[in-house]
Image (cartoon, rainbow, N blue to C red; front, top):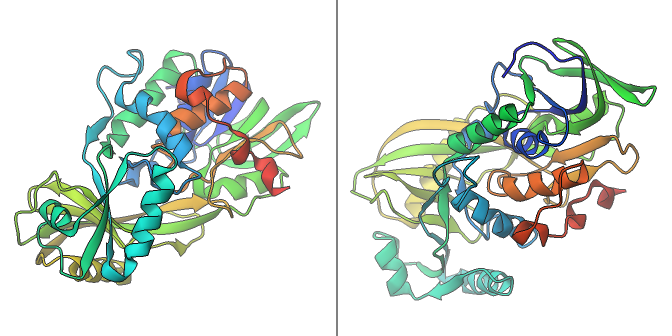
Length: 376
């Protein structure tokens, strides 16, 4: 995509991570689109640091409709987006200690009622799937449909599709300020002024700051730091190990390669928008929690990184027109589930901005629970 700024456009998308790129791909065949990206290249923050998986129960029952509706587009993408699927099957287990039985029962019941393929496992079945799990971990719910997402391939496919349809990407163009004059946005960026009919705020952790710079009231979207480690174990844990999630939210881990896992302490430390880095206390906490669940010796921490996950106060994504400024569109607050819900969110929001209404499972999702007006 071009490095040269475009000075006027229908829609200016602020941010070219997964939220902005997926929306640009959906909208560019129907509207003139420019994406501005503060960094040298798109996707260096939350998108590029995700240990992403498609996990239908992830994020709670309010996120599940978006995740379920997005599955087909990720598992069987249209030929003009990709010639191969973005998902690799894995399966998932939500586990608990003996005293967390009721919590695992409630989790299973809540998602089964939503149509999720989730079943309770007996302790012996759980131990077959997680060799080395400690004796006080007796409760588990199993989801066969969980899959890994090839995030880099998905993000690149969205960017290619947007470019092919005429969208332009301007890197190193941080939004500094914007104001409405004569019915259009006049936007000051690090690459000069741009003019647009509509601004879409897909700035992730910076979303509230972008709103304030445009004279729009922020929505209290809060970034939180999340830590992930690649751990080499002293036992031959298989690469196909299911995604293992604690029902109480203290950790998750999954197989990465033979004898290696990706591990997170499921930390949510409030942060200013920044280039997040892991802290040693969170690395130590992750290992402590892992070893409280399984008897696998840790040989080495081979990699560690952190990213920011941004949530609205009710922890649901926010997409749609600002209730006070209808030419300012929110596409933010996607937490850790923005990648697995990107097909649904981008198609539903694109339909509000001039693209055809989506059909199928995505078209059946009601976007109203995610509208910014719910905070008015």
